[in-house]
Length: 79
Image (cartoon, one colour):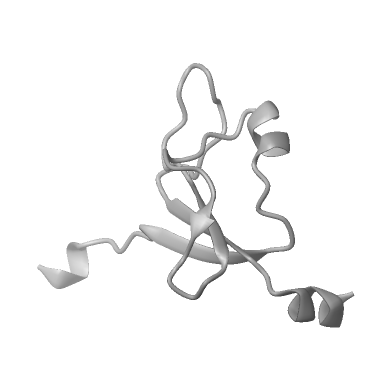
């Protein structure tokens, strides 16, 4: 029984250097309702919707993606 069940990713969390969604929305990426808000760690977060629609063709393709604003120190260290 268990070997026949497939595992699927349902949620992914990724650091982002800029969670501002306006550019991505204009390019057709669908975000979940609620927009940018503070996450549990105090960082700005936004969610990419798992399904696209007629208005927004791009989505998480079945995966809810959480974009987290990376701390300035992390961005500077990676540059």
